[in-house]
Amino acid sequence: GLDLLEKIPPAQGDVLCGYMAYRAALITRYAHFDNEEALTLIRRGKELTGREWTRIGNGEAKHAGGLKDVEELYRATLDDLQRFELDILINSGDHVEEAIAKLKAAVEESPDEYILLVAYASMLERVDINQAIAQYEKAITLSESEQMAHYNLAAIYVNQAVEISDKANGTDDISEAQ
Image (cartoon, rainbow, N blue to C red; front, top):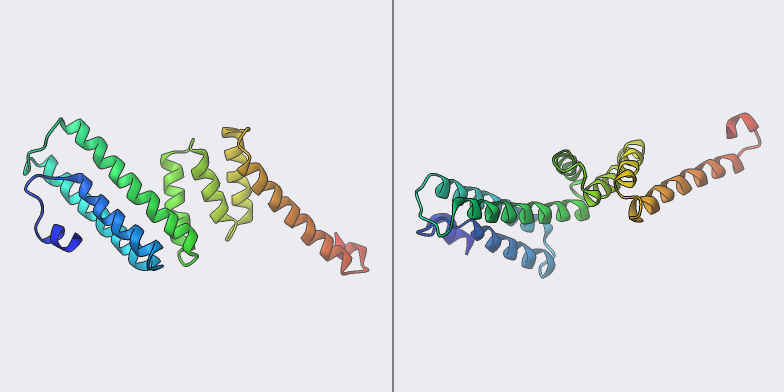
C-alpha cells in the first residue's frame, strides 16, 4: 500500500491517498494496539498528501475538477490525519508535551472551537492547573450551554478544596492550615 504509493506515485496527483495511511493507522491502533506505529503511519500519510498536493499545484499531474475542489479535499484529508494524530497523542499518555504543543497550535488557529479548547485544557491539567482553568473559562465563554468545560472546571475546584481540607484536617496549627 503506502510503500508502493511512496515509490510509484499515481499518474494523476491524488490528495486522497492520505486516507490509505489513515486506514492503515486505524487498523494498527485498534487491531494491533500499537500507537507508535499508528503515529508513524499518520505522519507518512501527511507527507504523502503534501507531496500529492505539490504535484497537483505544480501541474505535474492533471486533475479532474477545479483546483479549488482539490484544495478542499487536500485540507479535509490533512485535517482528518491531524485530528487522528492528536487523538493518539492525547490518549496515549506518552506524548503529553507534544500533544499540548499541537493542541496549543490548533487553538491558536481556531480559537473559537469549543472542543479544541476543552481538549487543550484537559491536557494542561497534567502540567499547569492554572492554565487549564483559564482555558476552561475561555471555553465556557464560547458556549455557556455546553457542560464539559463546566464539569471539568468544577472537578478542578472540588479537588483543590479536598486538598485544602485534607491539609487543614492534618494539622492542629491554624496558621499552617491557612
